[in-house]
Image (cartoon, rainbow, N blue to C red; front, side, top):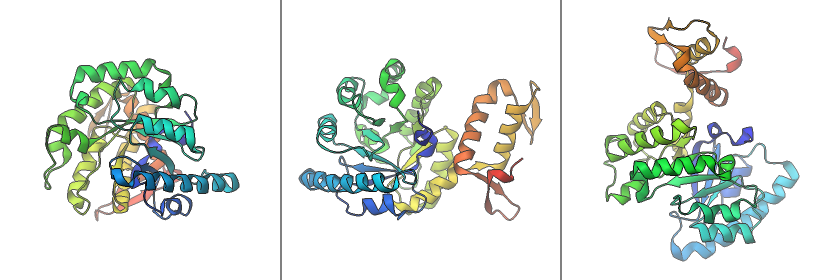
Length: 318
């Protein structure tokens, strides 16, 4: 997979309804600071009656992006994805629109049963995919194991950047909404995320974290982001630009973790002590490799005595 499409390059993935008229500005003119990836949404963020207008707006947007890409290239753009309403709309988009400026599709309500219909048209395009796990089947660990094993053996595996965990849709399946004062991990989704990590991450799949819909509660956001990182999730859905800097900060690597990772990858010792903790290269090597890769994208933070956080360029690290 191209380096540009590494799951670590997703960062905070901002969802924007396809009805918005400022999407081209966000992509071409760095309107949203720190934006690494965005999803143009035709599904939940667009009402049924607004779908025709959204499709018309999307066609105009794609024409603008195609011309800009031909003139200036797209290497400085955020990653751009489209989330169609369903597989039928996805096939329609691939058949009727110029998707050359787009990196991939987010596949809503993805299940193993829907994979053949998605792949029937995606295989003939350049598009990468991010399936969203957000249906009743997600609560069944056996069905998730079957999905993971099937994806490993399917040709779409080469196009799959990450699996997205659809927190709000999964909560809807069990008729719940997260309380305002709790993280998503404090309810049933805590189990679901742990289960999905155990099933998919063990097989090498990247998973992204669900959105935190409490936009103005930064304390809850910080707690949830810390848990996202503790579960090894590679990015997080954002629904407001003010969430992007928070997500970016959480994805940076602490100087202590970076130092441990370097020692683990370079040490000839079987076991050694570092900063009061045991390091064992045989069991910590995959973690260390992920830390280094994450640091190369997001940088390193150093916590000083006054409690401030400073970003340290990799060039200054030993």
